[in-house]
Length: 434
Ligand SMILES: *Cc1c(COP(=O)(O)O)cnc(C)c1O
Image (cartoon, rainbow, N blue to C red):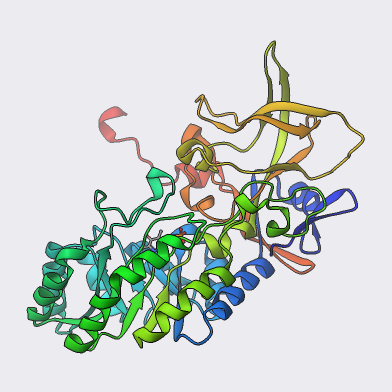
């Protein structure tokens, strides 16, 4: 369930009128619902009742400090993919010792930092990385806890740029060679075998690939448990959220609005299918959801600048752009776009919703039917809580957007809009140009 709904004519986040937020802080601005994140977290945790499950939030989805603090308060640990993310966990005042470190390109500095902060485990993606972690741990005089990421060669049926569990992409070691990889790991004096990990891809809307992967891995997990005292299995992230018809007429939650074909993977369905497979393994289970926890908990507020009427097409030009939210341009992603002030007496408008960036790809929606809106009015791009702000750039010298967190009837700026001075602060013109 998410907490964005119309009350009268106005779109609210929990008990806060979003137009008020837009007027106060300007646009483009991301707004997140603390209640939605808490509901998502609690619901997922509950769906795995009976299993010793631990949620490591994949913070690349949204790593703003307040969001991290909120999830840490709920009991989450973190799945980090860089030294920068690890330092963000520390900056948020959260605990690194229950968190895991993923990614194919960990540097020596990043490994040393994670060891110093007592990371729960490294998710190792290759043999050379294993050797490097062993080397860095040796220098530090410690044993590094590791899990090997195994690629189960399962088709997740998702977008090519976000599928990761097939044999032809860069992640993990193939299932066939996994036993050998563990034998190699056991021989390194400074490594301690802790777990095994998979991650199939992102925005999975069916539990089938998860089931298939766990069934494929079960004999190996049981074998590793006997041989090395394996402590945990991480089933990765990838649970999808709803992007289409997210706020369809009268619906109060994402799932109400769905036709059967579009029904997303609910935590209850995920738990019901997975618990019977996970429980007999008799090991701790880690989950690494990113999108599922925050995706439907955020919207991007934007102001209409112009309605440009063309011969064949209308363009609704808004002040948010691909630099703020790159998902439509990068993944052909669909996002619902709705007015902050809903007025059903107005005529409909069919338009491409575009930003001001000088790229044809700077388009949030093509031939979208919307309520007619004019200059100065606001719209919200829905389901923008995951892979929104974290993927933002300053392309076209546009400052990074502001971010606001809502909790009930209160809200707070959690990141002010970047100023021009901050944007150029680190730049230098060298003396030889002066
Ligand atoms: C990106 C990633 C996740 C999170 O993926 P979501 O689709 O956001 O749940 C989890 N684990 C690993 C290893 C990842 O790379």
